[in-house]
Amino acid sequence: MTGRTSLRLNNDLTVTQYVDLVVAAEALGFDQVWVSDDLFLRSAPVLVAAAATSTSRIGLGIGIMNPYSVHPAELAMAAATLQELSGGRFLLGLAAGAEEFLGWAGIPRPLPLTGTREAVRAVRSLVRGGRPADVAGAGADWTAEAYLRFALDVPAPVYVGAMSPKMLAMAGAEAEGVLPLLYPPEHFPVARDLVADGARDAGRDPAEVDVAAAFWVSVDDDGARAERALAEKIAYYGASFSPYLLSRAGLSVADFADIQAALSAGDPERATDLVTPAMLQLGIAGDADEVVRRCRWLQEQGASHLSFGPPLGPDPVAAVTVLGEQVLPRLAAAH
Image 1: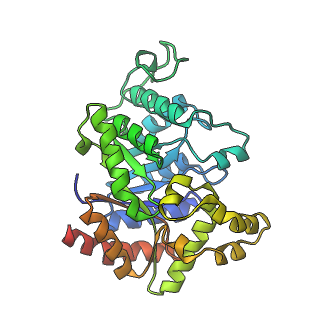
Image 2: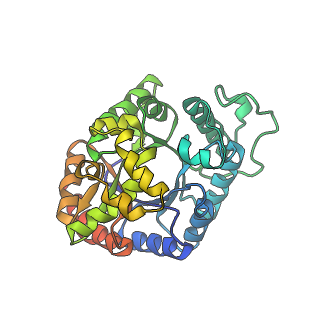
């Protein structure tokens, strides 16, 4: 797999904003667009359905859904139906989900590694016309009547959203692709090798697994504006970052305590002000030249799928255009 590019969007966008961005991404040559399914924002399956009817080529993914707020049977139903609607362009991202966000709804998240592995096995079985009851390690409660009553010509690929070493290895062993969230982007070689080890241990060829270098980016001609947009995103999500990844960047969850307090007090501007230069290194912020510089390093490390994530820029529409017109051609020429 070479030269794949994707955009990752948040489900805080309106349906019209999201569809417009996907249409623009398709026209600019991106291969995939992923949308998050964070709780209490817009429904990712509905967003993807809207985009499927307005596009014809681009892959449409949900990154990610989890088996705690949505049962794997429903996950498989949604994946199969969106695959049918999109003409075979749907991609399902699965992960354990953020414990903090699930906690808002009082949803427990026991055994995240085991629960995610069981869901991946069950969903992959169902979208392929199988029965989870016949699959070892797909969970213990399925019966022989648990199967989809309609067939797909092409099963929807399953990607795993992963950060921890064990989850990355599991993804390499079980899934078609992996969305390792890279905070910072320079974590990619470690994540890639963990996925490859998991694939080899399961008797798979690591080359068969699409490992996205999934990073946050904020691009704008004004570097300060680009950094501010990234800081807003880091402030909101900082407390839910993996301690393991934060430690790779020389940070800890405790470093975000004052930011979290400011958010809880209803002062997002103060929270954004508290984001430090070290925290900004968790993503990529700057003009097109800076984005190209750090992405070329990823390519040199073997990244064949570059995945550009939120906030994209202070003006997401303009940022997608900059990425498509000024960044992607230069990266393709260097690849």
